Length: 208
Image (cartoon, rainbow, N blue to C red; front, side, top):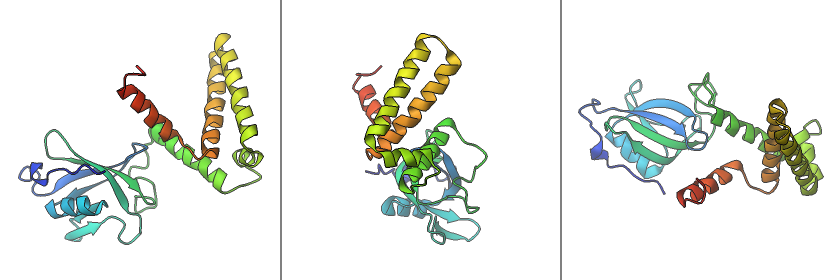
């Protein structure tokens, strides 16, 4: 459930009644865009769970995606320590940038963001089967073949570690992670579920 902020907590005098707002992907951590909100935009965003800005160019409220259909579904809203900047975590419905890029800051991609986009590509290879795709062919061959590949790559990873061949170990771990992702997708799971499980274990002090 969205944890709402108290609009009166924002230092409206300090920000000139327009609070700077950073939009971040709630899963990948990718910074998607920047905008500003007045009090009404904040209230509407919290009520509808979709991002609404105040457009200084149009001189009116502007619901992101009202023309393109690329809405930003709100997961959480956070006010910074100085009470003059909002961070909104979202799940974007399509590309955020008007130039049809995932982010308005397209030149920057963190490791986590790259991994998120890679996993989405692998999911597409499962959904749209192609004989030219190794990932697609694995899904066609089924769970037994995929599980076999995971076991093979795990064994090769162990051997590389024992023999202390670092370059080979990097290659083998890469292969292992790839095949584990394919296995997860074939079982209708994804990596963020694993991360969430690790988070729960950490919070319960079962993993330190």
